[in-house]
Length: 353
Image (cartoon, rainbow, N blue to C red):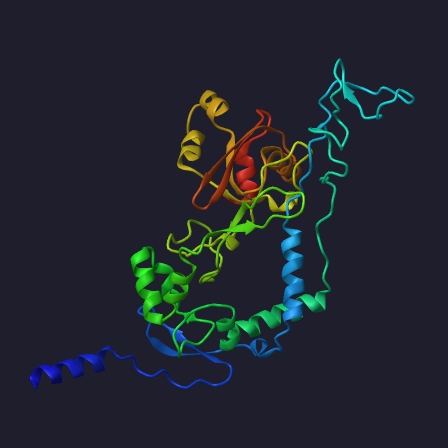
């Protein structure tokens, strides 16, 4: 009897307390332990109409605006020494390789050029009215507050969880995966992480007329939890569950040109390393050889020529060389100036020294 009573008390302790009732525009406030510590009043924007058509238009527009231009090489399919036989020879007028009867260079030949290849000048950007964009934003926020809409999209969470999930600021102190899993499990949303985990599957493309057998294309991945927090410079927490949709893929540059990048958005913020400070107190010869450099965090898709051009236009100086490397907090660029310019002076102008 005593054992049965102990089991009953254990099961009672294991059960979660019922969540308090909420007003129409209220959600629960969770602490780091996953317990409900209060309620948060959402802005009236979360009560907007859910317009899926406007959301689709807005997502299509800003996804197209981030697309990198691409194109074929200028001499693709034209690297042949061919001759045209002319008319009246009793053969087709296809250009042929000299000394043979093998056709080349024409679009209807093996290894020839494309008839209408993609060009870098093609404009992929799409426009959307300002009022429609705002209405789409309001509709997306309202959909994030609707439990039925969130569940219909495929997200898995326990009953009683209010969406969006609002957590106290102490959540930013979590730096390990184990604590993050413990928190997500306590809140009741870890099932969505398990749904997205291991969901990478190759998207198959079926055979079409005049096409070979089924081939594999780019793999797809389900969307999981997407935590949002105030933007902060520096390394991000390593436990953030990432997915393939969190980043915009930047493909290698084609020979036809590079993608369009706004020069005012390349240089994000400067960095001052310990080595730079030590060089300022060194000898003039050492400064001229190793110094006169400044480090910036730049956009990941920016190339060295673009970084050089943006820096010269913004600070009206001449750059001698640019080095780039990747770190956890993003892409860094070390910019070395010519001897007639001073990196220390630029650092004082922007307030880093």
